[in-house]
Image: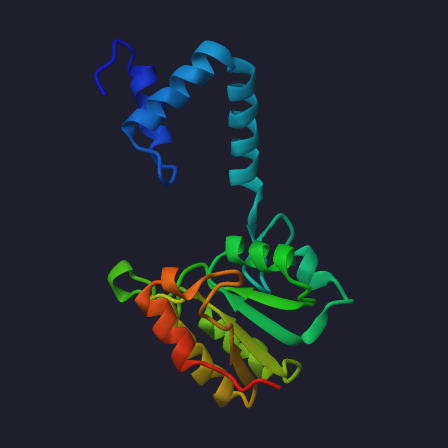
Length: 200
């Protein structure tokens, strides 16, 4: 973006690294911080610098953590026989906030995508296989997204579980609660129809 200030141009360009932020949105953000909220901008810069420096990954589940072992993995009250595998820390947070799940997690930090350079090693599947081999886990809950890559990842995770003698389950996909069939897209409806279950 043409500007008389190289620093302003650099700031706008830096803000574009955020997901969903294009040139115009980055420009609005930069102008807002400089015009109306310099204190907020300083606080954001400080917090971002500290977070980037001090937040790493849990050595057990790979989620974001300031400690080598995150609070969830260190919690002795959680059920160590249940392990839920998710793609991202955001997915982990969503499950934690929306369900009563009290087991452990494993965060892949992605999904199988050879074109993006994400294979089994990048997803930490060697670490996951080692955890499955410890003998404590009885069920592996696969909570990857219902995308082509997510399904391929789920298939590989199920193979790992079988090799370790661990039962694997998959999150149900289909018609959302409160949804009406006429408004559900064809792919979702077909998936739900094919995965129908017996009524008890």
